Length: 164
Image (cartoon, rainbow, N blue to C red; front, side, top):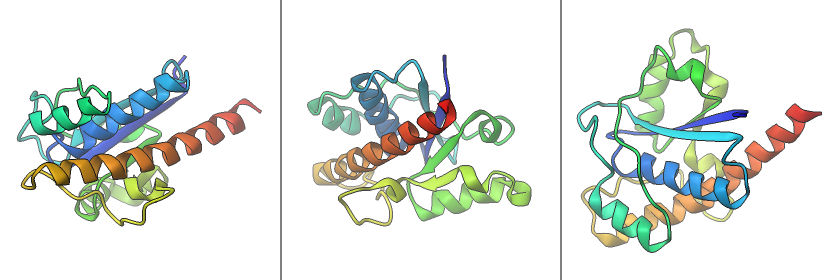
């Protein structure tokens, strides 16, 4: 039974948010929570809708044992706010774009920065690696892995509170 749903959001949904989705799904399987928590990803723009994750991001993730299987889609303000418990954005512009769609600030308690969950790193945003070389993709994965671990701890705590 699905108890929590997480949506990761970046601009185009081909680098950062599919990487976050893949890393989180990997962690959920490791912790045997993949039947209780579902992940998805979306972009604030629909330019890449239907496309797989950027090949460079797929390659770097695969080296870490993480598969990125999702297809790009645009954030759906009519459904995503209600459907997801956590809407986790990669940078400040994504945060502003999602907040702008939240008419009346009804879903403010669901919208988080990915870096809010970092436990070891101190970045304020997950940078867009699209125009960077391999080091940019590695940095993004490093930040996402740290933040995903922190998010997993938050979800576990929420599930424990929910069951009591």
